[in-house]
Length: 257
Image 1: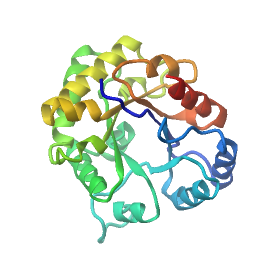
Image 2: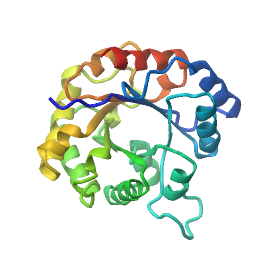
Image 3: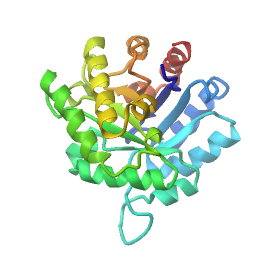
Image 4: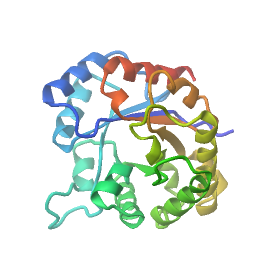
């Protein structure tokens, strides 16, 4: 079986101010595992990214700094957007792409996601591609169709030779901000469908190398069980990543798994 390095990413969304960012980084100093054992990262607002990269370096943190969104052009007249080339230039590790909130609130499509994935790979950034069923409750038919459709369109232009640099984040819309996450059986089934979809698009060998995260109501209480699933290689953590202690607990679960 292919060995895949676990990947834990905190998605801070539009939370935290500058002093809170600094405090978080100081509190996790010396408590993160070697990146060869678990890849750990934080996705934050663009205004913090440059300082976060510098602080992570000065504090010698094995912590990747990620954007929460990225544009598909390296430069040009695109007011308000963020260049993937500029992110790479300041040392950002990658970006979340196609998160459900971006799709719902800002009308992103599988086509725009695909352009952003290609731009990220072109600039050496790790694209964390979010996949979701856009429904209000669990529907097994959506679990079958959504990954097939989203992956087929969003990753259609990706070169097979670099496809294993992509991370897929399965985050069903109906579980985001909910009281509890789906059952382990539901999560594993969805992850297996996603991996099978990747095998159809690329090859089984490539699909076995691509890491799949779970996101949606992840907590320190359910993280260990989710990380124990065969086809889940990490977590995309929302509000539970805002507290250093909770975040570190989940990173430890990944290390022990």
